[in-house]
Every structure is written in C-alpha cells, then in structure tokens.
Image 1: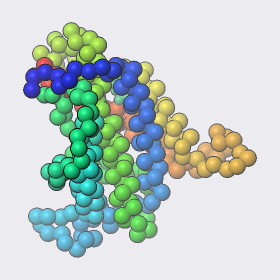
Image 2 (image 1 turned 120 degrees about the vertical axis):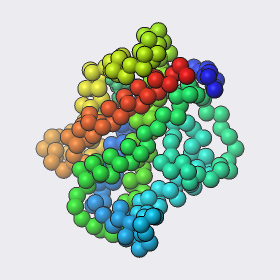
Image 3 (image 1 turned 180 degrees about the horizontal axis):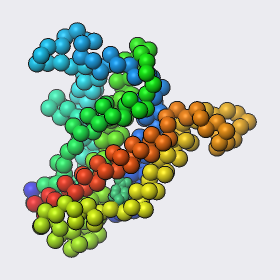
Image 4 (image 1 turned 120 degrees about the horizontal axis):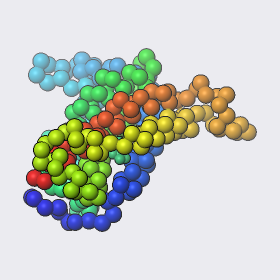
Amino acid sequence: GRRLRGESTALTLESVRKFLTREEDSIVFSLIERAKYPRNAPAYDPSYLGRATKFHALSLVDLFVRETEAVQAKDGRYQNPVEIPFFPKHMTLTSVPPYNFPNELHAAAASVNVSNTIWRKYFDEWLPQITSQGDDGNYAPTAAADLVCLQALSRRIHYGRYVAEAKYREAPQDYNTAIRAKDRDALMKLLTFESQEDAVKRRVEEKAKVFGQDVTLGKRVDDSSNATNYKVDPVVVYRLYGDWVIPMTKMVQVEYLLRRLD
Ligand SMILES: O=C(O)C(=O)C[C@]1(C(=O)O)C=C[C@@H](O)C=C1
C-alpha cells in the first residue's frame, strides 16, 4: 500500500512522548522484577533441556517465549500494531474477533523491525548488569520476567515508528529532502533533541530510585539514607537508556522515515 491506512487523529509529538514516558514505568518495573531472581544461567543454556543438537538448540527462555507468544497471539495481542512478537514465524491464527486499532503508521514503513538486536543485547549485555550471580532454580519465573522486560523494551523501541510518524506529519517538507537523498545523518539530526534525551535519562534514573527502594512505615521514602539498597541500580538504568534504548529508538525512527515516501 502506498497510502496511510486510515488517516488519523491524535498522533503528536506531545502524545507520543506521553506514551514513551508511561513506558518508562513498565520498563523500570520489569527490570526490578527480573532482578528479584539471580542470573539463573541454566534458563539460557540449551543443554539444560537435554535436547540440544547441532541444528536445533533451544533454551528454556527460547521455548518459554515462543510458547507464550503463541498463546498471546491466539488471544489477540498482536492485533495491536504497537506490539511486535519476537518469534512471528511461530504464530498461530488469532481466534478472537478483530478490534479496530487505529492504523496510524505509513504502511510501507510500519514493518521496521529490530527485534533480533533487542533480543541479543538484552541477554548478552544488559541482563548481566541487572542480575546478581547465582542460581535459585526459579527458571520459569525467570523466563517469564525476561519476557515482560523484552516486551516492554520492544514496545518502547518500536514505538519509534510512531514518534517518527508524528514528527513527519508536523513538518513533512523538512524531512522529504533527506528522505529522498536517503541521508541517514541528516534524518538523525532532524529527529534528535539532546535536551529531551537528557531529561528522559535523568527521569528513568529517578524512577529506578523511587520504584526500587524498600518502603518502611514511618520513614519518608525519598530519604536518601536508604539509597544503597535499590533493587536495580539507577545508574545502570540511566546507561541502559543512554547507550541502548534511546539510540535504538532513533534507529527505528531513521529506518521508518527512509520508507516514509515508499
Ligand atoms: O522525544 C523525542 O523526540 C524522541 O524522538 C524520543 C527520544 C527518546 O528515545 O527518548 C529519541 C530522540 C530524541 O532525541 C529525544 C528522545
């Protein structure tokens, strides 16, 4: 399709930023929930399930995510284009009636997908930083917590499609030249707001402090004297956003915009 499917309504820079801000809560809280368990390495090791072969090696987390996504797909989760599965090949047909979710994205650009990178980075780089060494045997709850983290991160990062659409609609002529020239650097410059990124990073660090402290009756929760016991390190959350979540969201925006005139 070459045209917007159902030209819509309320996609503005303000509305998309509101969505991203609310997603911060989900991301920070999901990280706190994952950090409740230690690393639990067997959940990620195909040999734990005892059916690893050269050609087919699935870890418990691989299996858990595939199977859970299949159930959620059947029940309609991915009818909403805001949600993107990690294993789309394993989707069965949905058995629920359709809901008329707004189609705000440009059809040719809506398929921008960085799920594989999110998956790899989460397990290889970020999980070791938010969990402690150890093994408490709670592998299925661990896998369930990972999936909630992955879904929240993926939703936030892929929401870059909506952010880009909002920006494009507000100033199409500013973007058209760079899109036609396939000029990634120019697009990156156009969509970047340094002060906004700074505010986002500082806010998620603060959220990690507020959500991640023990609550004791009779004690002010913002008392900085209990600052050492945060459930997930606020500095790690700051860096997670600065080094990864925001750059990936921007990458999604650039890829979306490059296809915006297709
Ligand atoms: O708020 C925006 O304008 C966005 O594009 C989102 C975001 C982010 O990922 O938080 C990304 C790029 C901008 O430089 C600022 C913030």
